[in-house]
Length: 512
Image 1 (tube, rainbow, N blue to C red):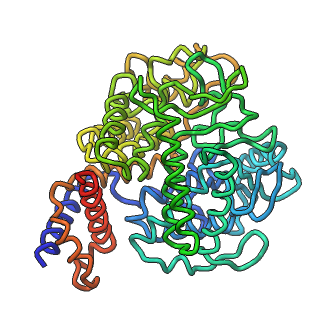
Image 2 (cartoon, one colour):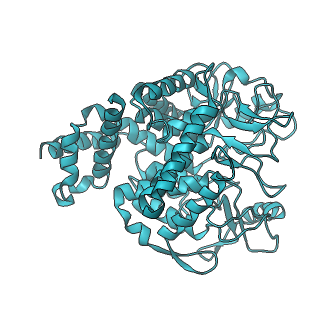
Image 3 (spheres, rainbow, N blue to C red):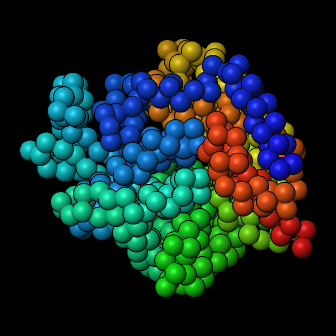
């Protein structure tokens, strides 16, 4: 009972800290909540207000599942309902694949504004039938492994009952979430086996589809250090994607016992190939990925980009020896927290040293800071005990929103670290150096920016890892039935126990 008492005190302290934060409540997400059971719209802004994005929804759920079970549950069910069931080259749908973007003319029998319908019709000319009342596009490769990982995180806190929950798929067939995970894993494994190194690579099947089918999906997001772009008509490997794949495979091995050895071995192969082919020893950092250059050769996309640091937010770097682990994590932390990346608003997408690779401002480039990505990297740093760096990033996220008084999807930051919290000023400054397409206006009220603020608020209030009791006490606490735990703190209390146990187990492996 000593462990229970001690953790109860920790959680009470945490709640007091949260009470003073303007961003602690998940009620902030009410402005982007879609009618049940759709989860969340991507923003309150003009572009994404009535769009359900797969990746964005997963990010929101990962950020707040500890504090809003209902929302996380709805998002999981929504992703399963929209999951691919057939092959369609134009929409890029494939069986088991999680969607990228869904739009429709009505939600809960209420029509959406004409502006949103106009956006949908425009997108349908590229991605779907213009006469249809809905648009469902699947141009994403990271949403599927992230979906599998989301279910894992949800089940770790709330139990496995959701695996037996039913939904009706696109073909009108009643399925379970377990079935959804099965076909998602099959899609993932089939893709991995297409390459000899078993890394997950993306390539669009629709010539008018999104070229970079990961979260950094702008055309110039992936660029070689010589300023050339990889061939988008050939496969591109994105580094952070391999971490999501690793996590997804390990969870699939847990729930599909007949394939456990196959999935575990495949996860190990993905891990090994990632470390061998994507690490840049001279830079002590990971390449952004692999791509085919102008000579037709596949090589490292060797610019320093934030992608490499996103590997911290997976188990891929945890399950190695302590010496190897320290090399990678220290290299990442040193680079990502250097002036090349760190700004008062968070982390740049691309190192400042590469700012001149393009003749214009790229919204996934050296002048762009996304709170969503900064949060993911901070969470990864914290998982490796790099608390000071993580806290710096959490504070930068919350500071930016306080100054801007808006949950923008990104902030533009110049070479002198001036953050343009006023988006009109940002556009005026950076548009003068932008050619071709106009500089995108950061979307206000972005769902995953709101959830980043909530998660950052809780993380700062919970810089309590040093107060965790010893592992045997944690195990004793986990063995106790829920009624013996503080009722008002479940399930957050339960997750604290699970997280503490995971941290201590990882430290134990590293010491060995």
